[in-house]
Length: 231
Image (tube, rainbow, N blue to C red; front, side):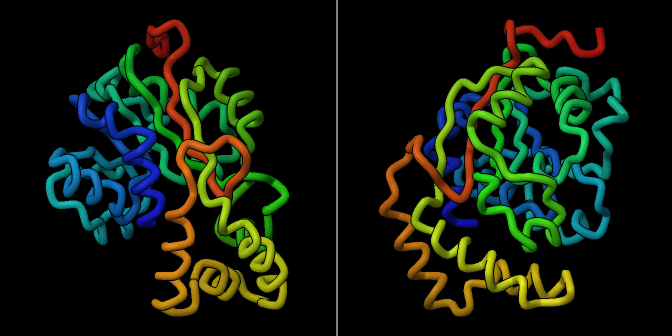
């Protein structure tokens, strides 16, 4: 989580610093919101469908809404100049409908910042148990977003040093029977020391890099610079 926010600062920091209204769709427990609040001293509106997650949300400055973006509430139309999708798109079965609803909430000159798990080769029982439909390459992300009126302005893979560990996880999680065991064992680094060492290892990775990674972060803009959704 800390590494993701470090990459986020490098990839999207200048955009966040200039932003007027930021929303995170699928904000969950608010770790990204809290990071932006603490580092950039600005609120991030949070949308999520899970009331339990919103009740545990750790943000302090930000408004929270139990809201389905497919409702397309008029008060949110073209309201936000930055939309964050941090590890959300991989959970969505109908990417096209979802991205069209995302676009409804964006200003025409706004930016969409996406983080997704990378490389279908790494897809495992952990992904399935966590509710992931897929993992992404730059090519597949560009394909689905361009089909829905977005252009990839910038991208970076990250987490390349962790790829061997994800391949190991792919083998290990097959030994667990319940989905809960798969998720907990697949995400737990094992100890604070290992977590610290993984973090140090990850810090040696140059950002941006375009070769490979366990995750992919991208900045997108609305094609043509005008939000036509809802017209």
